Image (tube, rainbow, N blue to C red):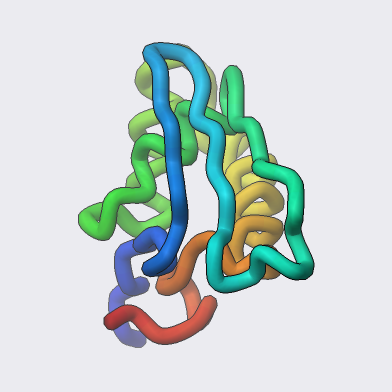
Length: 101
């Protein structure tokens, strides 16, 4: 079995980030999207870790440590959020979620 590829942000995103929030606009899908996505709280914590160096499992491990929670409790929520990001075209990579350039 091959190791999962790191998650990476899709090229062409416009992003404004503060200490607690990321506002993301998918420019290649601007006609479809039209409204920016705003990530706060746990969504922001996941988004900031998608930097091309971590696979989904690593994100889960880091969040489990940061929130002092069992990884098995966090993993389903992280997986669902990453799946949404993949569907929206905001990220690529992971467990077969699209090509990584």
